[in-house]
Length: 214
Image (cartoon, rainbow, N blue to C red):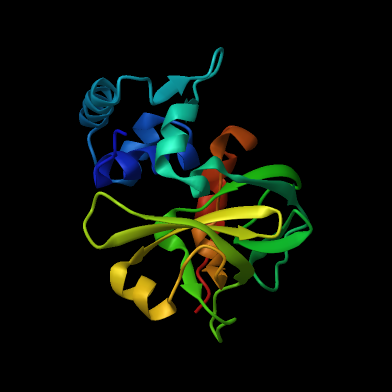
């Protein structure tokens, strides 16, 4: 199976969050034309479209083929955003009867969240940490990535599916195998609303309003 290099994966992650290749390129400090050329070359290697423009919209989205190659975390976590908690600086989001906390203000109602596998930490027990989201679950699958020494771990957390990227050393220390009980830890600042679920301009406003917890 075709495997993405790190820049392609990062570009597709950013398109998922921001809703366009140009915005994704800006967020990574890249020239938009270079980003488009890079994605076209990746599509040629993959033999399929990776990014498509939504009909009648200025927004773009990654295709099902691209999502299947990135991993479970990029398919999104769909739930309902509740009222913004000003004291915490987060928006509670209910997904599969679990409460997640997202940094910044989101519009109330249906929302799909995206988290990069690189931003998911795994532990055996709930840690004492400033991270706002600790999700108990079990390992479903794990396999080694093209990048030597890196392993992709798919975790079922109740009705949620989350993907983490960890090193071979972490895999050994945690003694992970299918069925192992783990806790997936995700910072509130690592959860991003997928752009298609927000009104035009809302994501940029949300990003400006985010203040990392000290």
